[in-house]
Length: 293
Image 1 (tube, one colour):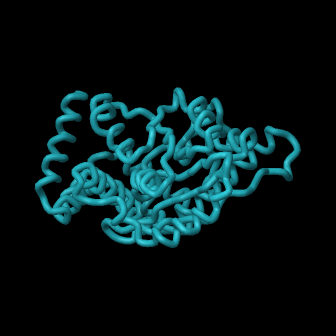
Image 2 (cartoon, one colour; image 1 turned 90 degrees about the vertical axis):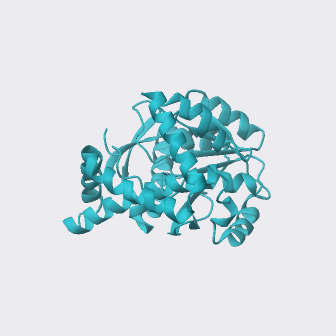
């Protein structure tokens, strides 16, 4: 099965290399709607999650948002294909890059404790680490290894490390993150998906309980790096604006115990992610069990 999946991806890669970019987007958009109707459990989970997150919306609005969420993932996949084939350039995606980079430079120029960039499975989350690495902020990016080892080894990992980032898996994450930050380096984390019962706390997201990893909060308390939430918001096909609310300076000094501080910090980061998702809910990855505890 892994070989079939791998060669299917290779086939689409080859196809996207010879087809016009507009046609690639159209093909992926078409398949996203097929998958929306075929993948019943994912469709129903998306609709359920959106209904709980937006109780003020009617069924038609929720259904439309769920479809757009599938389309958003398809756009991301198409863009990754085009990037792998060098048919698109990272720098062409960002419409507010000069303003953002100036602000980021001003915030980070005196930093000697490293940076933790946090983001979410929102819009095209794959572009951000590439863009940052190409503009002086290469990072140790933490992620889960893909289920298909052939795709992971031959496609995903080389793609993610193409511009100088280091792709690290969760089983070695903490040690590598600490080493990187002690060297005043940069770390990248996606912290918006369901966490296991270890190294997590109960928080709220869109007003509902969920488990969130405490890794960023723990690192903040022990090593005090800059924590910078950053997101891409899709404006149109192939164009994005960076959502940046400034450094997350909160240190939970108003809390007494370490446990309370970790809880407060983790909730604080969750709230920032929710703020970004609310700006364009159709661009978030609603088809996973975020609130399964």
